[in-house]
Length: 457
Ligand SMILES: [Zn+2]
Image 1 (tube, rainbow, N blue to C red):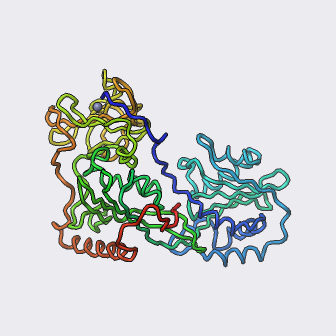
Image 2: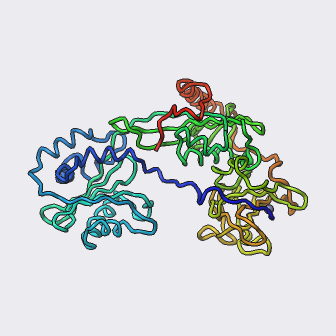
Image 3: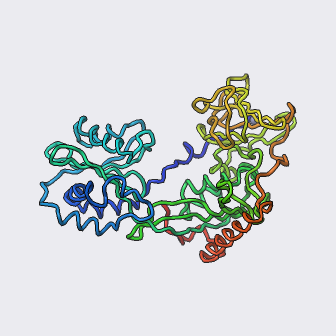
């Protein structure tokens, strides 16, 4: 608990998947004037883009055809003023639309249409969300909300003064992207250089969180591979990334590969190794959002303590505010200050196991003694409370009250697909398909210095 490390990054990786690619879609739609959008929206309620119908994910309406039809029936529109902005932290969407120049009551009325028709959930808006307003003589004429990658929401005021909303989905084509390289300083930095996004690295770290101590068991010269989905729009621009389908680590401490698979019997998506054994274990080895932890060997200030008889825990240096996960399913038996531990959580698991988390900056919302928690659920955030000289998580595991070294534990594993032959057959097909994708994407390691891959959003 005495160790110090300066955080190298100010905060945990962002989870936003909003991309630049969506801009191309919007550019196509608005074509520099408001008329195309206005026309489209007039066509909305009667045409194929009406609320609800355009939501069919499998067969979105052909974008160009819709646009042409809409524009054709549109009489010349008065010149509209437009303004574009992004949702700031702690800002409401109504606030943003107002900031872009719309009167408050009109902003609220237009957005209420989106909420009423379940096109947008006001509780799930992320900072960075883009909106574009079309103003006619100071009044809101139309509004475009870029809800997520490949999905735009349009609200238009009709001649009767009522608002009409429509959702438009771009037709997205799935691709796969493979990133593989020796780790130079960290998996995080290396993967990002090769075009992966924050989310892929977070997912990668989660897959290995059961097996790897990301702070001490990743070394220079280890190599990694990840394959994930990407989607392009009709113009071929990358719009968003999808699931990580393959994760592999070839290192001094561990060499393992995992394939994403959803068994048809229980529907529980998980990552399985070559032989169909789940990556999931009873407890996590790195119970923290560990995407950036592997940078420790590149730029650490001084080594972070591992387990010793006196220390009785493992320290993970991480920026203050990094999410801390429940290492396994269980019940919170302590969530309060406790001397040198500072803000401290203890979780009771099955079979006499307990895990403990010290020096937290704060607890997750609603977390208190008696609450049941699920493995991987965020229970608190890294901090430096109590007897601590820098932000880190101090993690302890107890068996029947006795502290044990979490990094040395042999823990029960999750599902073994071979026990269900039908499911194992499904898995083998899926695994081979993923290996085919990997082969198509080239089998060798990519050099970090070569920009082989286009940047992902
Ligand atoms: Zn410690």
